[in-house]
Amino acid sequence: MKNHLSVWDSCLMTIRKSINPQSFKTWFEPIKPVRLENSSLTIQVPNNFFYEWLEENYVGLLKKTIRAELGEDGRLEYQIVVDNHTDASMNGAHHGATFNNSGEQIRNPFVIPGIKKVKVDPQLNPKYRFENFIEGDCNKLARSAGLAIAKNPGGTAFNPLVVYGNVGLGKTHLAHAIGNEVVEKFPKKSTLYISTERFTNQIIEGIRKNNINDLVNFYQSIDLLIVDDIQFLSNKAKTQEIFFNIFNELHQLGKQIILTSDRAPKSLEGIQDRLISRFKWGLSADLQAPDFETRMAILLAKMETEGVKLPTEVIEFISYNVKNNVRELEGVLVSLVAQATLTNKEIDLNLAKQVVQSFVTDVNKEITVENIKELVSEHFQIPLDKLQGKTRKREVVIARQLSMYLAKNHTSNSLKTIGDQFGGRDHSTVIYSCRTVQDLMDTDLLFKDTVNELEKKVQMSISG
Ligand code: ADP
Ligand code: MG
Image (cartoon, rainbow, N blue to C red):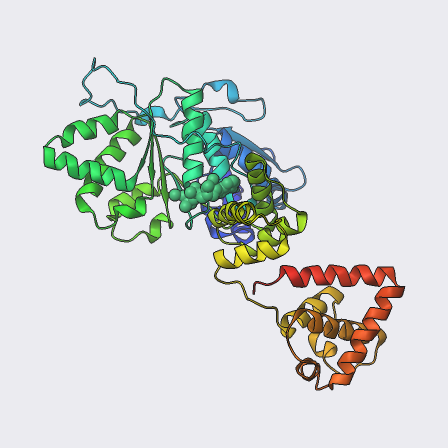
């Protein structure tokens, strides 16, 4: 006999095979099957955000899996856990019953009632906002979780939220954006941003002045605590111990904690296991390097705020070559504008190349014949060995001649060296090829477009 447990177990087996382990852990492990009635399976999810995320990202997979298990009439219903910060109004007819899991609420016996709360300066940078945090696949999860928290701090399953990723990918920006949003939406809540470094210094100072309890009490009164770069807690046992106490208290009170780190919690070194295990209680969301489109979008947004205009080819060039770091992307833009103003030069591709090369270390100074062959081979979908081989097929011959033409015009190789790299042809063949390409360009506009397009690709790919 099938029941909700066995059906959901089988579903999980299929789902596990279809998505990556991190997503599985984040989105499917917390789900509990509740009941099976007729062909309808009810599952319980931790909150509304969770439900929306599943519907948005996994609806196809879920549908397919449920039908495979329960037949064509198979249906899925959601039950959403309502926490103490939200009311029941989120239950559309769609999401069945709800229940309250706020039983964990424990009053803090140590908080002295009646102490006047002084308004805390949140220490936020007002420039870092959601509106100027460009969304891309690279940051989708972290950004959405951040938005969900900003709507309902302390009231989501993402407590703590750990945003992690390499330097310059937007951790600090996102953390401030959440903070700024909460300050606006919940002016009564006390929000505080602090870097781990500064926090550590306060602790040292507190120990020295013997007022560490005041400090701890202060932190325990915060509603949204953002601690940036927690990897710097590493090997600081006393700070870790005190942070542990603050963390526990806030978490128990249902206060929101947001942490950033340059690596995933499990990879943190020199930090006590009990702390790491708490970091994993909520959601760990990583920021990846942005893809080409996102880099373009970030650059365009940045240009608009700075009031700068750049030629499209320059924008594309920068986005193409500055790959790993949003801070570098901004740096290139700023220094490009500065250079242009100082030297009174126009911002063109050449200037952009100079600036990018001074910023990004992995840029090749010059394209190689090998790079060109790869570009052409990919463009025409002709295998490399054919391109440099003996085939006399017309489309291969043209692609080969075009490669030589590009090699002659975009590398500093001699005609002989170029010929050598196309199956040992001599320099007169290279000259002949270049002339043919030129003639074709003069007579065939379509061909000319193709050449232009390839030349652009060549110029764009100065990086390896
Ligand atoms: P991290 O803290 O991860 O080292 P930051 O938050 O300091 O990175 O980001 C570096 C710079 O890049 C900041 O100026 C930030 O505004 C910008 N930035 C990062 N990600 C984005 C994004 N998705 N959209 C717009 N700007 C971004
Ligand atoms: Mg940072």
